[in-house]
Image (spheres, rainbow, N blue to C red):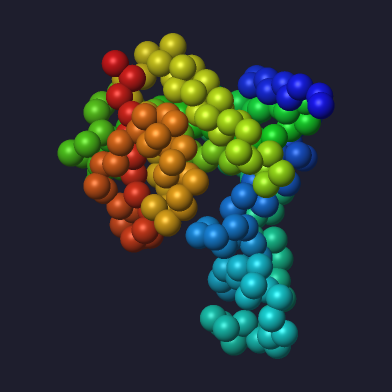
Length: 203
């Protein structure tokens, strides 16, 4: 049996195509269900809903035409945005030379997250997204990515990292709480009632 080798490294432009595949696959799963969307109104459709023989959109009642929920341009834009921000980093993980996952984030200001005023300090970074390809789960890839992200943010002088996830996602909650040492803030996203903010103090 061949040994498995995992390497966490900075993102490179050559990684983008595979990163897009992992991004789409991860966020198409429950509880996100960001698989397809109506090209007319942008309403989301899960894999199950997209597989139904619908003639019109259930939300806008127009003739149904579905497109990828996340376009390649949008995902590339997310990466570019992260890299352009204060303290912005994008890192990826390879398993035996194949891209297995990624995470990215940047420094944030309290005025951008006013509802976190009671739990967020003035020197925080935000882990925007973290994802591992479906065929690379349960190998510790997410833990290695998350640990390296925290290390890099600490090296930049940030005192805290904040992340948001859906509390219905047991694997995600286990990663942040048990593996990486985040704690629940008790604060939920005002727009998504099941999406909870967690934090980890680095100092």
